[in-house]
Image 1 (cartoon, rainbow, N blue to C red):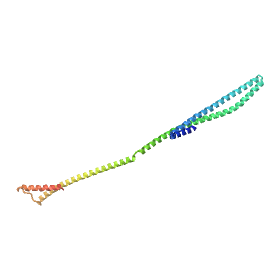
Image 2 (cartoon, rainbow, N blue to C red):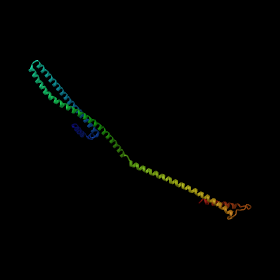
Image 3 (cartoon, helix red, strand yellow):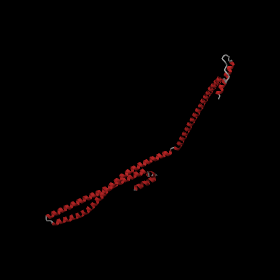
Image 4 (tube, rainbow, N blue to C red):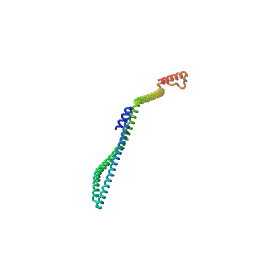
Length: 253
């Protein structure tokens, strides 16, 4: 904790507080602190188990010493040395009294060792879980950074101007297509009118010819000159000129 405060103060002085507030930096710093704490807890567990093992050795030594004193006291009694046996039993009683206290301490040490082992297991599981969460957080942060970059790129694009230019181009093309269609329609209408006028003129000419023939048959028009009477060249030319004028008038309609 003190080192973290010192790093914050140093970053503040050096103007690098923004870097220290970077989420990735915070995650990495938290993981590093958890691993350091885990190492310290392991060392404490080793020390606790070492003390338990030392107590176990002392208990074993006291039990062995008590058994030896009891064996020696029995041998002294067998040899008739009652005072020596009594002295050995006094020593055994002291060892048994110390052994009783040692066994209490050993039991406590064993319970502490088990609790420390369980705490180490839980701490390791917590660190593994936090490391997995850190990976997920980094992935989410990277995804968010990419999304922010995409949004900034989209914000910088001139979408409105491009869309308006596109719309203007489409409208201009539609107008050009409409104008071309109108011109084609007018052109086709004019040609049809010309063809219809020509056909009407042909029909009129044919009708005039048939009417003249009918009038000639009915004697309603001037009779044509008899073959025995020669037709003068001037009369023929006047008739040709008349027909030519009539044809020009029909064509001029």
